[in-house]
Image (cartoon, rainbow, N blue to C red; front, side, top):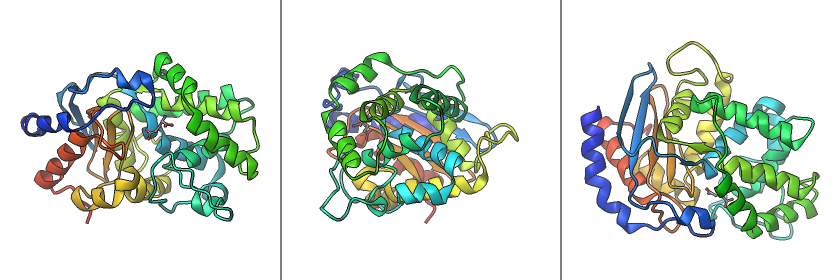
Length: 305
Ligand code: GLU
């Protein structure tokens, strides 16, 4: 497996020069566009890797499936769906998706920013500090690192350049969908996006989702099995932004990307995959990362279709 990962990584390396690091969050623009790594954890616990797989980066949108899990654990599917639906928007992740009559739960998706901001309000806790701590604890279990923490520089960079997210949050507030203090909710969201991981952590999270809630190398359960079906289905239909349909054809597995250049992928019952390559395409997906997943999927027959 390691030989295959090394070989595919080298075949896909030229694609890193076709993308660009995200620059609307200034701290992300400083990342090395040539960094490239992959880590795979099989359901039975076997680890394989290649390249810069232990370099750290932030979760960004890859925290959205964790927010969704936390919201589902705390409220159940019915309550979550009354606030945040499951249908793909087909629009960019930060789009202001609101005509006069369309801003209701059916048009708010958990894998785009509006949905993620609403999900912060669904986490249980006496204060936003406590809510974020509970999210961080769940993240620690999913990525297999109880010491997981946020990248302060990225967090401050997001907070200081978050006008678009503020616009989305105030819009939600004006429609009564978000009731709490906007700045407190956004602070929770910005911190959530700034949680630091590496490819190993992403692969671990993918493996837990692939194992329907169980840790890859034990019988310990992080969340009930039906939630994996919910989250993996949402990842399949809208985890790769407005490129999810094409990704379903080319790669065919549930996955979530983030503007840091990470991709967390789930091969149900088989493995979790973490990739890092910060040069992005225009939709915000890692160019070389998608190419690498496509090749891996072809070689190992990973597509679920
Ligand atoms: N923190 C980023 C934002 O709110 C997350 C976007 C992403 O990774 O898609 O814009």
